[in-house]
Length: 569
Image 1 (tube, rainbow, N blue to C red):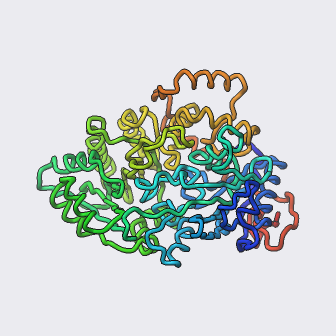
Image 2 (spheres, rainbow, N blue to C red; image 1 turned 90 degrees about the vertical axis):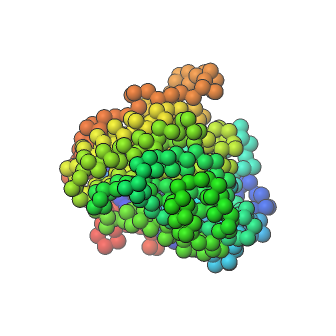
Image 3 (cartoon, rainbow, N blue to C red; image 1 turned 120 degrees about the vertical axis):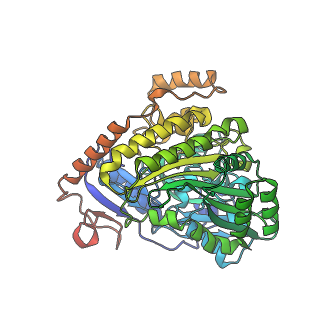
């Protein structure tokens, strides 16, 4: 994102190159582990990224890195400084002999799934994202919650190695063989859950390829939107959803759910959309669903709206179909505004009981308040986690909130810009009701970032006590705070570092809780956003600045691109 640095506008892109067959992990990595045989990006491609980082640092220009572009706070785009778009650095190499996959830093999950699909490797997956258009590195660096995380763990748990360009322009490789007490080991720890925009530009990584547990290479998956009968018992929705969320599903079962109130739905009914993923056959799915004792009509429809299919077809076709609406919303052609807030919930019966009630009440209030307004939507999505993700300690990687069973976010969508203050006000009040029920009364998922978190609150919300070690890693690898997106890890002063270390030792098992100072007011946020938009809109365009040559067809340009700008590389 933008910073106080020189605000010359540049758009960056890394040109695609084939993987070098002669350069592999064994020869290209300083670790020289003969077990790792997958290919890495060629040396010249890494040098391009190094050159861009050095350019930005030497001329005091902010650098924003874009992988998939799915940041809910817009942190993967910028209108100042350099935008380093990794999209064309998207090559993937599969090595089933070692059950590893090498992935370039700009690849999307669709790129990563393709080798498995093409080779018809049914029953094998990389522990990736639900939506194929999500970037691999962005997903992994944020921790990674996928359709099979309940059985395979966090996405970041399956990484064996990262190669990245750090703030000083050096190419650094870190991995599972590094001493955890070394600087490299600490960086490997930090990248798994807090790596996005904090420590460097990831140019490649190596992931494990894992077998599914169902034994048949079959995944049973589908989608169904439920509108409870408005003439029936008004308690049906709450009773059913309370039972649904507090059920201890098997690790094979993952069911996401999204409540929504849409002003374009004429009767104004609240709906719940279910996305099911089951690592096994249709019979096993139906049996587990029946044992949950949900509403009979809902159980019947969920059974009818799933299909068993080979895992490669699931990766190729079903994930795209399940997430098509989310994908379309992310297109630039979608002329709506969206704002978010997120939470981390367990599913203990007593603790969870209030959550569906609050969600239902707030969605009904949204419908009343914004009735008649076009294209207004309030959606509350519960992304199913738990299972294997919870079986490691909170400090195993930088991703802190492993005991979360439902990573939940509120998304509010509107078309008319003059609704922003009302929308932010509604979201703020909604958030205030749910936040005390989140883990430690403050936790939220960095992959579902909340722009309203105050500067002294977001590190606690995203990383809890892990933030203290993250600040130490930041001091080692980026002491000048070169990578400085608005909610990035901060470089502490020496005195504060000692005090925080003492505090960490004293409160290791007593996670800090939420305070009322954790958010900025919605009026302030609205004014801040509006002010930044106007200031940036009227900045003069750069005229002459570092127009040099470089590799043929290079990928960083002054504003205007190849048609109207000066090439830098």
